[in-house]
Image 1 (cartoon, rainbow, N blue to C red):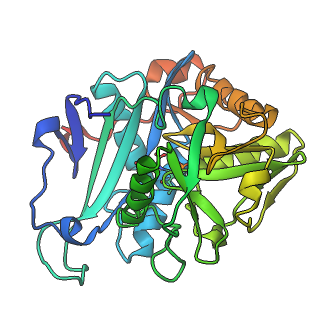
Image 2 (image 1 turned 90 degrees about the vertical axis):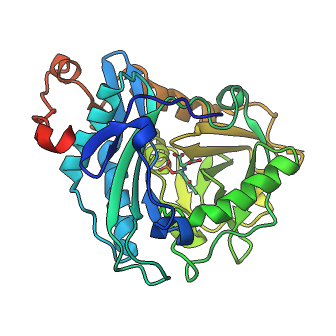
Length: 328
Ligand code: PPE
């Protein structure tokens, strides 16, 4: 999917034209993968455009940065404001928002702490992540020969640029084998996650998902699904899952901001359930779309990007803009 440019990207305190949002080739991040990012979706709900779980994504971003001894130059409230403005100024109704923090230009060599920590927030229209039919009909996936990074190599819990070197290998291999996505096992051979999604298995009415100790990213969508399931009275078990379960589960689905809730139709050519999205997967999708399409928000997960939208809801959640000096 080639990027479709919009007008502005926010970079280090101001909006610049999309084409001008550049960094120096000797920036630390280019050489050593030193970046941390988020992927967030804004939806055109019936009540106006709203960003899904913005605060939770920004909190994870701050933690990712902190794990690498860096400090966020902007606080959560500032970045909330910036994310909203990026959507509004680009006239986007529904989009993907990408805040990225990186070590910039100034010093080179592995030791990173003398480089500036910089921040940019971009947004663009991004359709279905695993193919147009994926959410509806499910995807065919394979177990990767690449294992997921281990707890004592790099923290999988941090959404760091460098981690995605591992994800890229998984994704390339999957594509070579004709799969939409690959599933990584951790170094003990237990199920970990997709290259860009968390994974859930349904077995005899119980929802299983790997724990943080299986080198997963603590996904916001994963948490969303766990919340729904508990409310529905469906038992949720976070535990280590041996590979064999991937071939015998009644249902399997991926969760992620980009992938949303995508059913898995087969693993390594073995059909999952009937080969069609199962009832629990469907229920989770329904609950999810009720929030992001209908704009129902019992959990306070939606941040409406305009005053009108939030006013219509009877709560004026939008603060005054950050000073224009900062955002111009
Ligand atoms: N695991 C990984 C490795 C991952 O990259 C993601 C998100 C998740 C789990 C799910 O996390 P969450 O989005 O909070 O539910 N992957 C993002 C990046 C995809 C990309 O290609 O870039 C995403 O879905 O936005």
